[in-house]
Every structure is written in structure tokens, then in C-alpha cells.
Amino acid sequence: MTEEPTKPPATAESPPSPATESPAPTAESPERLRHRIRWGLVTLAALALAVGFLAYQNLEVVPVRVFWWEFNTPLLVVVVATAVLTLVFQTLVGLVIRWRRRRQRRGFERAVRRTGRKG
Image 1: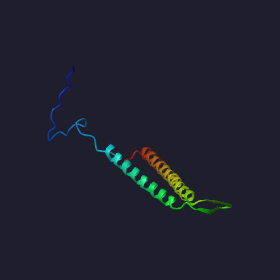
Image 2 (image 1 turned 135 degrees about the vertical axis):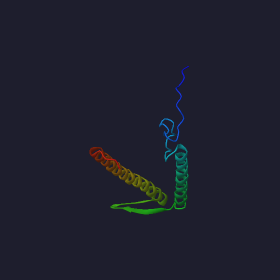
Image 3 (image 1 turned 60 degrees about the vertical axis):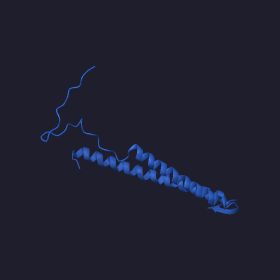
Image 4 (image 1 turned 30 degrees about the vertical axis):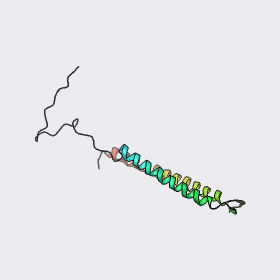
């Protein structure tokens, strides 16, 4: 059993050592992240329920024309397909925006490293 050397207590003249300071709190603590995920799932479930309810009320067959195609399908299929395509499109646009921001941030970081300046 080894004993760790004791450090003298911090006084007004000497600042506390970095080892004794508590780490800075992060903006995304695990509890906060769980809370965000939970509300995201609740929102997704509510939206899915709303789309399902609207789709169930619209079971009649309707003619659909997309560019040069024309076919008859239940309105339920049109509503669900529109919801799915909207989610896919929104996700793709979000990925492109995040990719551009990440690329721009990396460019800024490289420029800062080249110049050696902070802030």
C-alpha cells in the first residue's frame, strides 16, 4: 500500500493546482442527452400517430399523376409516401449542411494552426 504525497492547501497567494480543480461541466451531460432523446421519440411517435390517423381516414382510391406516370392508388399510400419522402429529403439536406459546416470549421482550424494565433 503506497501513500500519495500530501499537497499543501491552497492559500490566497497560490492558486489551486489544475489536478484539484473539477472539470468544467459539458453542455451535453448524459442526463440532458437522455432527456432530449426521450422528447424526440415522443415527438416522433406523435407525428407517426397523426400521419397514421390521417392516412386511415383516407382509404379511397385516387388517381395519381407523377411527371409522365399515371396510376390509381389509395390515398393512404400517397400520404405515407409523402411523409417518408419528406423525412428522407430533410435528412439529406441536414447531412449536406452539417458536412459543409464541418468542412468550413476544419478550414478555419487549419488557418489558425498556420498563423499560430488564438481567438
